[in-house]
Image 1 (spheres, rainbow, N blue to C red):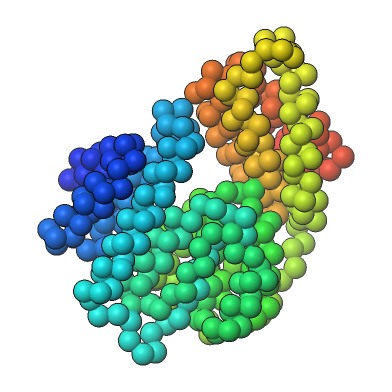
Image 2: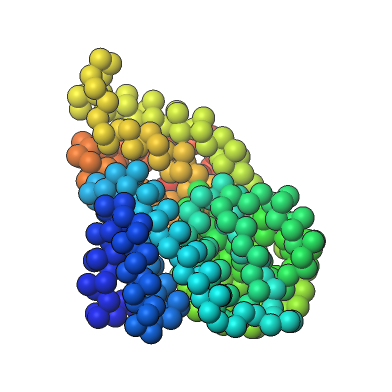
Length: 343
């Protein structure tokens, strides 16, 4: 996605409204842009999506709190829904026989705005879409596929920790013969992880999704088994990630005892953030194992280092975190190999 220079000020104004928590101003701005002739697809690609990327960056840099990030995302979801309903009331909707699709976030994935953007993009292009939103279970998704008989299921995943669940849902949906298209920040741009997990297709953008849908087969066979080294370990790590995260934290705090971390002292802000994110960091090892891609855990550790640096963590935290992960996963050779490759 390339942001046109003429939209820079619009994105800045929209972000200012999000920072104030001003839903009325945010909705008023996009309605004014609609009256000027900008269609929904342009507003998604040039305003809402760039603004959401900037919201994430503001949290990473510790400029916004996690509460501000969540509030801003909720406003953008409501703005997009309002725009989409208004478009449907003003324009012709999909006719009889329009392609039927299901769009869903993978189980345990709560970052629903990207999936909602794809949904409304496809509806604007004439597809009939059943949108399931965040955290759709494999069982519920398959039941819906049986009830609806869609031409394809689109799965969105933002966090690499949930790639093992992507695999499980791909397996479940493909058992029905339905093609599965995946997308989101958890996947690499080349689509290698998507192919390894057994997806029928991969798309990097809403426009890319529409193009790929037109080339999908009518039916697909069951997903082939995962045979690469470490695939079985992925589900062991994922299922134990909360316990492993506690062990990683204990080892990390022991290493950093000389950095002012001791009982009785106030917990620093960076440690509170790390405590919240550690299950996802452990889960990223599972994501690397199931997708056979050490870049998954390398990216997660780099991201964690950036987040912690912005919150004034001790300089030795990042290497100590890597070592603590290695120690906690010492009995799993595949996981250790992924961590060694990501060093």
